[in-house]
Amino acid sequence: MNWTTFLIYLLGTYLVYYLVNVLLDLLIRTKRNARVKPFPVYQIETEPEPIDASLIPEEEPLTPEEAQVLSSGALEATGAVKLDRLLMEAQAEAIECTKKILQS
Image (cartoon, rainbow, N blue to C red; front, side):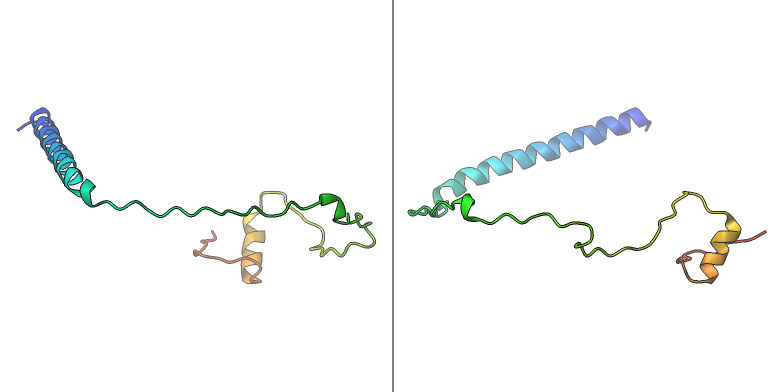
């Protein structure tokens, strides 16, 4: 049996399988339609009162002196770290080392 024959048999099997599934679904659906109950629909008769947005007080923006902001300090993001520096950071447990690093 070569690949072409195998793929033709496989395609034929899938077609028969899906045709049988579609036919069974159609047969089951026609029997089940008589027993289907409509789902309940709930309607709310009263609408909520509209809110007057002019009554909401506006907050004035804070000046930088008034704002309480947490600072993590100066950020350094060069993007690349040399291997020696990476090993020093791993030994100091500043970074998590998930795999063993071989140093040559």
